[in-house]
Length: 507
Image (tube, rainbow, N blue to C red):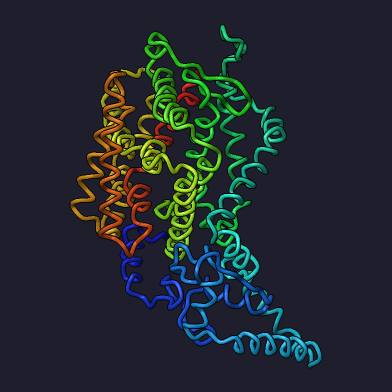
């Protein structure tokens, strides 16, 4: 299948910025609906209101500001704005009468007329699921409001947690290790993970991520090819996010889905061999750069599931069709807005929390550059690996890896910068945020607080700048952090590539 490069997709999105806007909320309009230029969201809202006879009330003074980010906060004011924009109630009623008349005519007419709805249905089924009115309607209802969106994500998480035992049982019969292993117990009584435990856990998580994604209405509106592209990009990230959240109560272990533990390696363990030491050092990085911040921030389940959903809906996922990019981007913006609303309503005494969540947990830019440079370094270190099989792995996997990293930077860093038209003030503050990294390896305990407070101060300045200069783009802060601070994928790429080497080396 031919895939348009991500950079070209962003060029298309830039052109679409100039498209006509919805008179009601300011979102991208799809045409004239019921007498007014409107988006599909406001069209569906107005239609549902009339057909179902909904009556709304305003909790304030009927003066709520309506835009594409908060249009679901007050339905009374949104409906009033639809009327003022020129939407006509009778056009919805007439549309309903025409549909009813068409159905009755088709059922009482000749055979040729009876076959027309079936042909139309087949055409709809062959196209993307995006056109399904049932999915679109429920999606707009549940995902337009921050509270109901987060409730839906929490419900999805509960559903997947209920499948845990059956999935573990399903993957339990597979054996990955060549050498026989005996599960070991640590001094604390926990069971130390074997190579089999590690790969069975990965297998279970990959099965669960598919089931989880299928519980999300926006995911179901995408074509099968676009769903696959998102899952391929997200699956390894899901593994690291989940193992980190599962392990946040401790400092020196990773808790796998089957309740076995990868313990923090000693220096001797890391230096035992290049391959196994490489994998264990990755585990240690996850403990220090993912688990420790989660524990420090006391991240709750609502924050966890919204961050996880933000990572899933990645508009620069490789293989995503140009048609899906806008949908995925808007979905992620909606989820991030819900997270922002949740943080500001619950964590009102922690004004830096939103910055902490995104800067700590969505894998700072250092990981992108780590993978970039580690791949170059491995080409030099390959001389130390004498085993023919390991040489084959290096030759086949890493020879093209460096060039593919260059391409990722073009698509996942350069193209978003151009699309966002990032200015110098935003660039220098983001760069300073990355410099002052409180989980930088080797930082003294005394310096951690100073570095953290400095980064919080810088991020607050960025937030103030964005809100004062980009007043018409309420999603900009989320776009800057999610696009440009190198999503979690890079940490997990390095993590799982090393896992593949471990398996291939038959350790």
